[in-house]
Image (cartoon, rainbow over all chains, first blue to last red; front, side):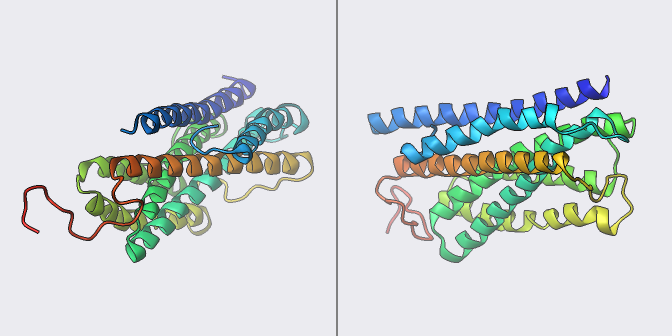
Length: 40
Length: 234
């Protein structure tokens, strides 16, 4: 793997993990809003 | 966006997320290629801010843990839990980007050097923190156990930081950046710090809302030291 490919893979993995966690938070927030509306 | 409401929160998230492509442009095209390390050096713009924010998230866990031990308010436990999740996320980013850098620079993915070993221990400590939580059923006992654990776990952070300064280590202890490289590093530090702060606050808000849904009678006030057991005498 060349240096350019390695650093692009690194950014892909790093930002992918952060995006995945943000998506998880967003879905949790939506589920929480539904629970609060239903009162359970 | 996410758990917190209000126009300012949406502006915060929109601004933070908009900084990501701008920072990427800086890293890809504005920052020059390092003469000695080559293109792989550019991974430090993500690696270093992620490490700093992993430390900050660990500090949040430690601060909230001490505060819970002092005041016994469940909000501090919510905050410590949020910090632990975010620290695991950022420690994972740090280790994976560091391994890619090591493969290109040292020729191998991993070395059991003090910095790398203490960093791996840091990740495992906070993964263990998250695994301990569901294992303790009483909310008060869980919060106290995690507060003690969260306070002690932070002791690994200074070990990670000082390891390259006090011990012989393959990992570089400091990096001399100037001009466009320094500007790019500051841009990434701002972006990642804003994202990390938003993540902690959102997770904290979700934890608090979940607790209030499960215990609506407590209204956010810490329950007594001895939880009521259904059917037991008062």
